Amino acid sequence: MPPTRTDDELLAATDIPVLLRYGLTQDAFRTALFGDGAVAAAVTLDRLGVVPRSLHFVAEIVRSGGLAYAAELSEPLPSPEASALLRDWLETAVQATQAAQGAPGQDGDARTARWLDTVTELIGLRRDSRARR
Image (cartoon, rainbow, N blue to C red; front, side, top):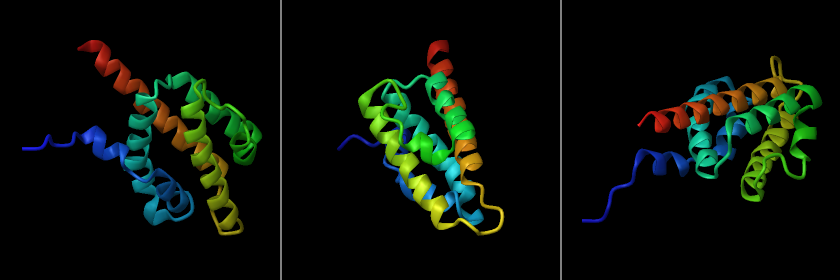
């Protein structure tokens, strides 16, 4: 009998760019982005060794400099692999929010920063849970 996949493996297979594309611009998908999408991003980044404070720093950059500025950072996270992944997510968010620009209630920078903070908290919770075991 082949080994079954764990919940983490299922979440890590989630297409986060798709959730960002629709979750940042359409209210109907926001729950999926901040639910499954945030957990999947936390699992993925945690596996890459990203510490919560580095992702929180990126969220602050999004708030102060804007999403497009953050997406152009050469190394938004300490490791090259995690940086490339996050840059891809940020570029997707930029494209989605630019396409939706002008739609009422669209503030892609603020939503993306909140999503990054949600992912940050989830990474922290995962680390704390492991430390208690």
